[in-house]
Image 1: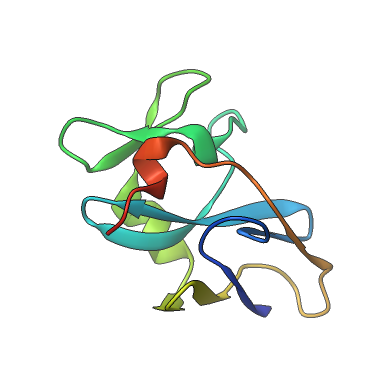
Image 2: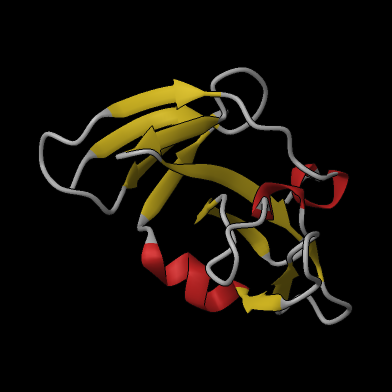
Length: 111
């Protein structure tokens, strides 16, 4: 499982491990590193929005909500200033690439 440090916003705010993207998001309930792809249909969760009670992240493609607490449990991470260090799922030696993905305004807000 790769240990990766990347930025929480701006250029380099995304890391791909074995072609799966992960981003740091902020919501009213705090920040977390989450998969940037919807587990249902692969939609761009980085462009999703939290539902009214803040418990689910709603995919912009098919409007299905995914539990934020379940997504948070998938990736242990620690934020320090404008970087985050995460233990990401994937085999040792998996290709790791820093990149950029836009975030919806609801996920880029301060926590």
